[in-house]
Length: 173
Image (tube, rainbow, N blue to C red; front, side, top):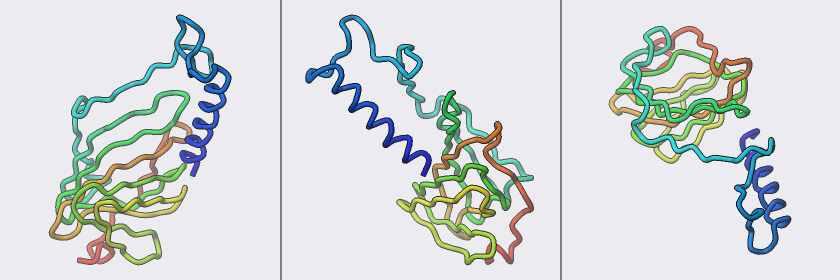
């Protein structure tokens, strides 16, 4: 929700700046629009494949998991994101996120569960919001790999708190 509010605020501020520059939408001659600090704003393009993939650490995952970083934290923002691919039956350990997490399923089939809840099936196009501090896990279906994009904010430099592994019984094998 915080990210949605930030996007709405950005659009509102952008419209306000556009109104102040006139109908043509141009800034003062010879200057680029700046950020809130008055510094020239520059877009950053993170090229696909420009960052090395890493293997999901065994203490945090069961099975084969690959993490492909998409973008890291860029101050003043605390948002980061990556594409995570789980081979069949692979899954995360139980964990929480201090500021919540958005998952966007892009390929395959998977499972997700909130502590005390039922195991839910997830498929491409599904978007999952996990609120801050909610204990959960996610991973691939038993016979199908899963890829999702994970987007989360950091609090005090941390974006996840890892816990115990998900048992085969919890996974639903």
